Length: 301
Image 1 (cartoon, rainbow, N blue to C red):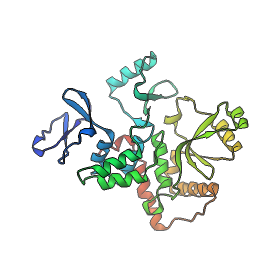
Image 2 (spheres, rainbow, N blue to C red):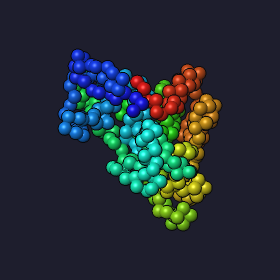
Image 3 (tube, helix red, strand yellow):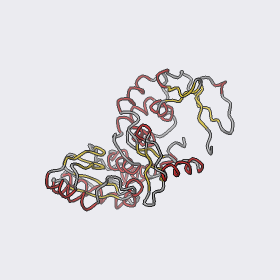
Image 4 (cartoon, rainbow, N blue to C red):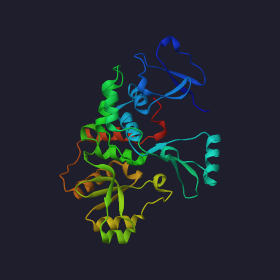
């Protein structure tokens, strides 16, 4: 074990700091419905209640990104070396069980990456309910705001990051392109099916005006499990009257390239666009600095 385990306590006098233990105080009491028992005297906090705890000390952007992960179909897990070795052996021998939909994404050489796919762990309504019913004030307002801002359905960290940068309003440092959905299923026409050799495909970020923004993430797409080639995908969707724009991580790290991408999104959507003000540029730089951090550090709060 490389990191201490967070242990929830209800009274400050229960705190016993040690190398392997990091106490977290919940003085208002832990709701019975928020704990899942995994042994006679051992329980784990359900994800939505864990996020409520984190929201009390995390920033709004961190909370939105973590909420997007919980309501999405991915998780980032950097396993300790000994666990990674066992998991890789099971993958190599095709004996790794798919528990509750959890499956690792593999790179081109069949090696386990830090990205895993799984079913969503909670819904937006579930997050809002926890925030509304929480007996303590700490984290409630932030979790409610984050739940209202996040978009469910993301399948990778890069999709979540792209959604925040493009979807947040200008006053929050984003580009104001709200109204998209993650991984919208598009049923293909007969001609498009013939080209794509499947009945449907999924759009990373989709606007109803007919725009698919495809996140070019090698980590998410390395396994090739069911993804269309870029050319086939784009052509099939174009046949359906849907424009396809690719976006890379490098584009989001450059202020000028983000502005150009934002204008391209507006053009494809057929909506008005304006140059950001100096203040909005500054807010954008701050937002991207926080959003584009290493995903594995989001929990360092």
